[in-house]
Structures are given as structure tokens and as C-alpha cells.
Amino acid sequence: MKRTIRFAGVAVAAGALLAACGSTSSSSTSSSSSTQPIKGGTAYFAEQPGASPNYIFPLTPSGEFSVNNLAQFQVLMYRPLYYFGNGNNASINYNLSIGDQPVFSNGDKTVTVTLKHYEWSNGTPVTSRDVIFFMNLVKAEKANWGAYVPGAFPDNVVSTTAPNATTVVFQLNKAYNPTWFTYNELSQITPFPIAWDRTSLTQPAPNPDAANLPDTTATGVKAVYSFLNSQASDLSTYATSPIWSVVDGPWELSSFTTAGRAVFVPNTKYSGPDKPKLSEFVELPFTSASAEFNVLRAGNNAITYGYVPTEDLTQKSAVESLGYTINPWVDLGFNFFPINLNNPTYGPVFQQLYFRQALEHLIDQPAWITHFLDGYGVTTASPVPTEPSNTFADATSKTIQYPYSISAAKNLLTSHGWKVVNGVMTCESPGTSATECGANIPRGLKMTFNMIYASGVTSLAQEMTALSSAAKQIGITLDISAQPFNSVISDQPHCTAAQSDCTWEMVNWGGGWEYSPDNYPTGGELFGSGPGHTGFSNYANNQANQLIDATHTATNAQGALDAYQNFMDKTLPVIYQPYPDYAISAISKKLGGVTQNPYLDLAPETWYFTK
Image (tube, rainbow, N blue to C red; front, side, top):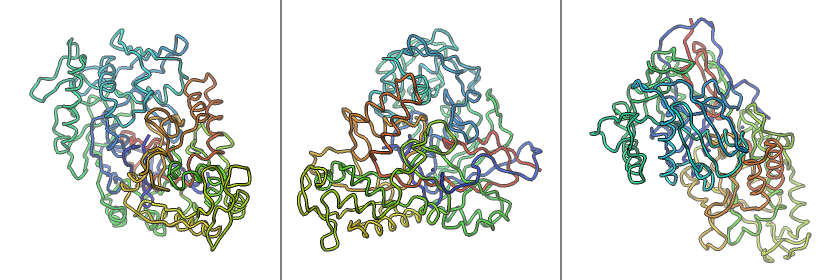
């Protein structure tokens, strides 16, 4: 569950405090002049601008819980228990998973996982004890983990046992739907090597078979986490550390700079499928999309796999003439902006469904995709994505429920007690009847709102200007202003209606939400509410909670997901907007085997150069 910003045609992921209209190209594999692979060679991948990897430990805090750390750095070295993405299809990939398909029993309250044969680079096998090690750490330090949602994983796991070296048994606190639990809970697990189960570098690496290791006691496990977190905070030692050199993935770090230049070489002990064919894989940092494009456009093969910023798409044919294939990368996510339902002044307005419907009618999604995203994006009608290929979205989610219509937007407001006075939509009929403004909306309140959006994103600025212009046509004043991404994120905290400082109104970071490692598109972390937690927009709805819970527990998984998405696309907990493609990739025609994973994982182990 990673929140993203689409920066000039490429996504920059931020911490998880935490894309059918338009794109017609495949996002699956690159083409090449020949299919005959060449062993060896170095491939250069352009990192997202200003978003280099900066945290290596897979128990990642929220501030570092990002695409650049999880999907395009850690996964190369440390394999999760379950791997997701089959080509560009959003589904679980058991072939690339350490665990066999889990077996649910005891009325879906017991889950048994059998491990395949994988080895760590230090020669020890990946065992059930490594899964127990992860579970001990995540249970002790869940508050420091970016994926944690109260009441969900690991809270819903009562116990984890290892009857033998290749079997792990999870006892759950109640019955859960196997699809949801596999896609969103087991997906969180990354086995950790026992070589990490220590509290200092001066200690020798522990024996995997030893008893009474530090992670087995309350004080010991906290000391282990403190040590590993401190090691992960020292970027300069990533490539030399005896900790991070113990890997079970296809790659290990050869060198790493604090600026984010990462050089990987094959892990010769890798025992999984798709062993690397390249001799080296390099991730290159860039401070801006324009800096990356200047290197790409120079045509000296300094970048093997880069991207074309949206504003430079007029040069697409020139890039292709340099020997690149242009291939959009579509990830499983959706786009929206929240409005503050608890704002002390405008919250009562935002809480009116008719207002949210009117605001949604002002967004011309097909036109925005065509004119501002150059066709590289998809419409959003609900939290369940329609692309890339998946089995999750139903017919309702594939249809915009409130299509662009200035007249429909205005009629919704004027039929509910609002009137344009001196050019501004004003509440003239306060009250709670069907033809009045709504509860707690005073006579004379004017629709004059502030919208903060992320700076540096050309298409986003164009979209917000278009929205402001459309709003003005019906008497809504939308004052838009750009701020840095991090400011936009911090400007929309969860808060209650009782808080006098809960004053933010509308914010837009431009990239919505990407589903992973919660890979099943349900809404607990997005729109669920309960003690200590409310959803985006400060949304809290009992019916939504019931529908979300049903996606976790119902026997008919798709039926429950359909009911959830159909409620969310009609009732608008947030305002939906087009989802830009993650990146407009430029891939060397000499590079074969490239698959653009729907969960944004990099897999250079499948890449190869061709003659």
C-alpha cells in the first residue's frame, strides 16, 4: 500500500502515511531485434527522479515505505514468501514464490505453508524458522512498520509455529477468506535469515539451529530490531555490511552510494527460478525527470531502461530512432483526491453526497487523459482498478458513475438549496429536507474552497486549472496552489470534527494509491474506520466498514468485493480522477525479457541482451 505521485510521466513514491481509456500499448514485454540471448552485459535502469532507495531492511517504517525501496530495491535481494504478478496480470505467482499455495483448514482459521528449497547466500537453507524470526520482529515492532493497520496483520495471527524446517502454521483469530488473507496478509511476510538475529556486528553470526536466540524474548527482539534499523540507516555500508550481504534473492549489492547509485551482481547461490543472465545491473539516480531525459536523449546507451517525461512526448519518435521501444508501465492502483469531511466550516458541505457528486461531475476524465496525459492513463470510477488485467473489477467499476457535466453539477446544487449570489454559489435554504442545503450548513455560506496540489507535475497543474475553471462556471470558487509533495501529504492529516485545527480543505498529491504489498484491492487501510483510524477524507461509514469486513471474511470473495466497490463508486468517499500510467518506459531494443510488473517490482533477472 504505497502512496505515489506521478512526476512528469513517472511516479515518485512516498512513504505510506502510505491507471481503460487512453493507453493502448502493452505494458508487458519489450521487443528486440533478435530473440537470441547473449550471456552477460550491464543494464542501466533510471531510478525515479529524486526517489533513490534509502532503506534496505524489509521491515520498513512508514517514512521509507515506498516503491523505490520495496519494489525496486529490497525485492531484488530479499524474496517475499509470496510473489505477485504474472507478466502484466495482477495475480499471485506461485512459481516465483518461496511458499507453495497455502492450505486453509479448521474453518479457514488455520493456514499451513510449505516452503520450497531456497538458500541464503551464506549457504544455509531458508526455513520455517526464518519465517518465525520475521513474525517475532513484526509483532514486537508493528508500530514501526509502514504496512501496519490496527486489527489486521499481524494482530489477526494468534500464533505461528514451525513443526519442521519446511512447514509454517498460522493460527488466526477467526475465519478469513483465503484469497484476501493470501493476497493481503501472507503477502506481507519476508523470511529473515537467522544471520540477522543479533544485536551488534561484533557478535558472530548465530547458528540457525541455536536455541534461545535474541528474537525469542521480549527484550531481545527489540534489541535486534534496534540494531537492524540502525544498520539500515547507515546507507554507506549497504554493500559492505555482513548483515545485508546475506540474501536469498537473485541479486546482491556490489556497490552503493548515498546518492542512490546501486550496482547489483548475480547471487551465485540463488536457488530460485529465473537466474540472472546479465553480469551486472545498475540503478542510476536522477534529481529530476529532465535530467534523466537529457541522458536518455543523448543516445550514448548510458540508460538501458528509462522513461520519457510527459512533457517530452513530442520527442517520442526521436527516442525510438535511438533504439528504444516506448512501453507504458501500468500498475494496479487508482487515483483520487481527498476532501476534509471534518473541516469545521466546510465539512458539513463535503459530507453531503450531492456535493461530492457535483464535484465529480466537474472532472472530465477522458479529456484529461487525452489532453494532459497524452493518452497514458486510465479512468477511475472506484477504488478497484480496471487495469492492468485483473479479475477484481466489476462492470460498475468500469463505468464512470458521474461523467463530466456542468449542467448536472449545477442542478445538483441548486436543487439542494444553493443559489449563485454575486457569482458565488451560496446556501439560500438551510435545513435538512431533500431541497435544502443539509445539516449544519448555515444560510449565506459560500462555496469558496482551497485546493493544495503537488508542485512540479505539469499534467497535475493542468488538471487542477481545468477543475478550477469548470467549478467557476457553476459558482464554485476553487483557489488552487502548488506545494512540494511532502507538504501536500502533511497538509491532510486524519482529524476529528471536534478539532479546531482540522482546517485543511482539499489536497491532491497526483498519484493516488498503488496496491502492494496489500495486493487485493479492498479498503481497510483506505476507508475503514474505528478506534485510532479513519480513512482518507476523514471518511467513516458503518456500512462501508461492514462491506470492507465482508471482503476479508466472506466465503464468496468476488461477491463481497463487488458489493464493496459498488458502494464506493456510488457514494464517493473521495473524488476520483484519472490514474496516470506509472511510467512511459523507454527500453532498449537490445534488451529482451523485460516484464513490467503490475505491482511495480523490478525483475532484471529475466533480462538479457540480444544480438
